[in-house]
Length: 347
Image (cartoon, rainbow, N blue to C red; front, side, top):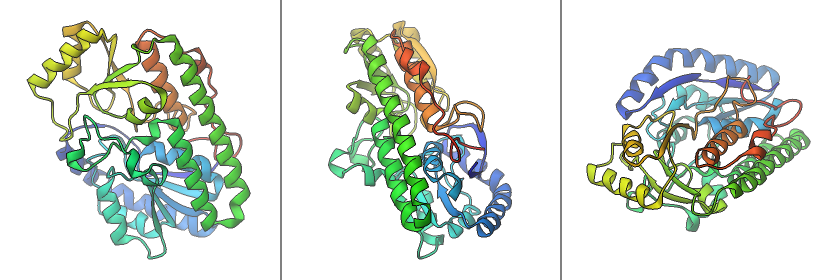
């Protein structure tokens, strides 16, 4: 099995930005020891040292890299990745990295800045989002208004973009490690096959909903690219761009919209509990589902569920069934990403 360093481990939800700094301080001491371990292991076994950010990216990259890389993910699961500030000790991992993969699109600006100031001159910072999506196709929306200059960064919730992330990762790793070319290509092909099967299952299962029923009201606006690709409509997101609660006027407008459009379910987040969505659910009779995740992987660490593929199956099965549809294809989907080295995240 390939080696993955969980830099911070799986944490519990941290919501306001002011609490993130406290969490970073708490894990800083542990970080230095883990980073040192990763450095010596990589030096001894010749594996590429890869640093990533949020867990879905770490999972995709680990699946492509397999046993030829050591992966270190910087952003703790259950944390608001939009406001996460890396502790100073993260600079050690970044300084030792052979390549740094981030999502980009302003998701991890503090990490990007720290990486630019600490990495080796020959280490690239690869922004997967801009590589996969031309600027003309950026989405600005409820939580990410254009006037703020930050597009919606959640491309990985759309399987078609996750495939592009994997392919870009493959090409970058091959450039750094040509001897591993066959393995990188084989593992990427396996990932693409699984991601395509996921996409096919979504398209099949969503047919159990009418076009009008394929509407999303969420807390965090994480499904905009998915909606565009698969023909859904995001009718609102409760969390505004400043990550504060919406105004009473905005809440009242959402209640009216849910009633008018007869929305069956509204979706909260395990990471971002929302009293506002509970209020909307009670006022409208819509079912409030509070378990969606966008960068917090389900299942136990090391299990098949604890992966990008497991995350996406969980979310879209949950969405379709909560709206009154059936998801037999998603339920039956094999979420073991591939056989052999590089199969899971993380071990």
